[in-house]
Length: 282
Length: 282
Image (cartoon, rainbow over all chains, first blue to last red; front, side, top):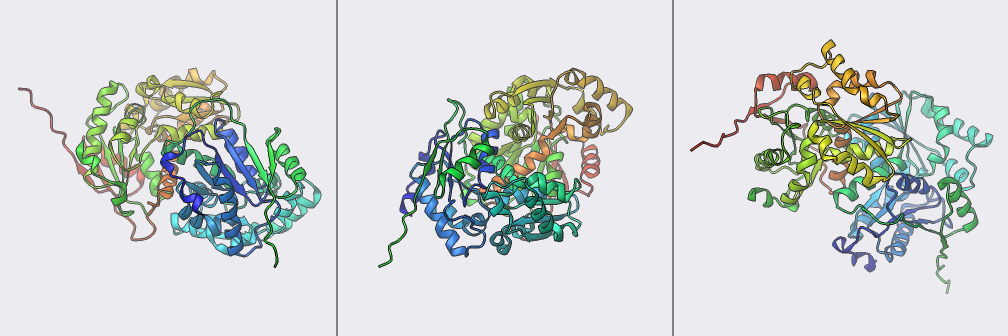
């Protein structure tokens, strides 16, 4: 990953894009919030739809995939990298931070920080993929901030496939969400972290199942806010110029990606399909 | 201010304190939130109660006072400086940022960022001191993020003296708040920034006057959150150790400061009075 190391922060212009990556379409929830909160910033998004979901994969494989996407995006000289995938953040954030000279933001600490600020009782729930929950990354982040926090984590492996198929509001979706969240409803949590960037697609359903006394924290929304904070702290916010044209890349079926992205973002997108080279078997 | 320039960020330990300064007791609202959100972090607070309020003072004078406090605090080698005073942030943030090698955080951008994320209608109100409103700093920060935001600013010069006298919930306070906010009630804002760190002391009254359809943004709470984000981004969060003992300094009457601080923070404080040397007239 030599190319990454050549990118020195001091040489990066504020006009350069923010690179956002995910295993699939989930990171679009971060994109939507960055577009809303930072309309002047140019975004470059990579959805690894050919290899989604990352949740059940071994950590080594997720790290390898994440490095590969970063290597692809870094050629466009972004000013920041956002790992908009909880699974990849949990296993690969520190690895990527150590390899590139620009700021790298994951989605776990922003969600943990917001939940830590919001909870009154100190009883916080986290839902995520198997990989995220197994990593214990949210629990670690929450307890690092406030050691007395009680954390209840639950893997919801059936949510991502629903979202990747564009199935957001059906009866099937409601039933899956309701039965999956049952173990958490028995806990006296007052705050629930949507610890997967796919889950905001299902947030209406999740809210209706959990009831109004549980505050939902979208790691996507909170990450957009922290992107703004960090770019400001580092004097890297775009201050002027034309409204940007964003660029999207996906490694799988471009029709499905385009359909979901355009519905979610409410606008047409510029999409470039990317084909991963499969190593030849000799 | 040579001493400031000698503090290199790389030489600062994570165990060093966060230095927080204000014209008086207002910055204690930031302190309370930092204590809640980051209980492991040691805080060093300076309230310039001998010279409060800063709001009506000329910009040059506020800048000079702020530099003087920073010079005082920097001898303790803090890892970050927080200007927990909107007036001082508005006029002196960039000056202080250019003078010290550690991160310097003000209270205006965190509040603006939170309001920008929260508003649905793009109609945002800001209340602050005369100095803050005159500076246009919130409007500039909000429009830099989202150029289409409509900002309605209102100076409330009678609020700070009420707080500095510890007068939070009297009939007099209600009447002052109600009559002061009247011009803003005629605007269709959906979000109101408490653009002075003193105002959270009055937040219950302000909320009851503005009604439940207006979301209040406390620049104090939001600043605590951003302190956490920036320390994390820079690998400067304290990760372990005993619970810290905080240190407080004030330049005016220590009895009044102690009374307000202990009521607001709900615990005893270690307070050191500081006497500014008055230049001799020759």
